[in-house]
Image (tube, rainbow, N blue to C red; front, side, top):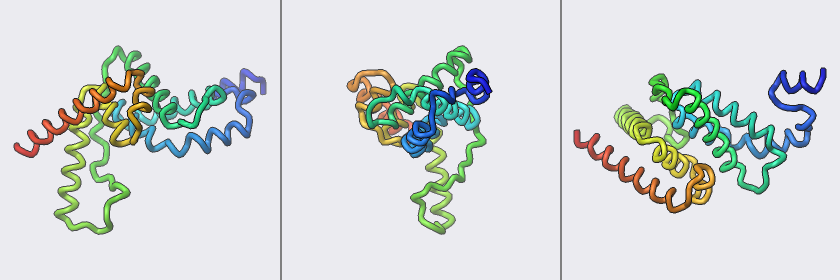
Length: 191
């Protein structure tokens, strides 16, 4: 197999990515797969598109792993993912993907206690679905900031690096996103 065949077959230059580098990449990047997918899910608003974006993100990260410097793998991956998603939106003429209502509302979070009562389970599902919907309804810059902070637990500096904005802008977006969510939640509970 020629070098161009190896690149064409898997999109990664196998001569550039040796076994040791691939192992280091796997050890550094795979622990963040769930966080990367979570952000992709909120940005793409569709499970299939999110999976495609995560795959593209990890392929790009592997291709450029030799240029990555520093211990902060998670923000680097999230920044790549954001670029992948924005490129896809640009390709679609900035039309966001339709919401995927097929997302299972019965997904059980890891922190759930075993065997909750039927009432507790119903309220948890209602709250989970409502919060997810309210976050998805936020404008994109606020949605991405709240997901990066509250779900992916990034610092303000890390979020600033991912979104390419000053820390002050990140703090402002986060405060506005929280205020918008609080207002929407109060309107939802009051109705």
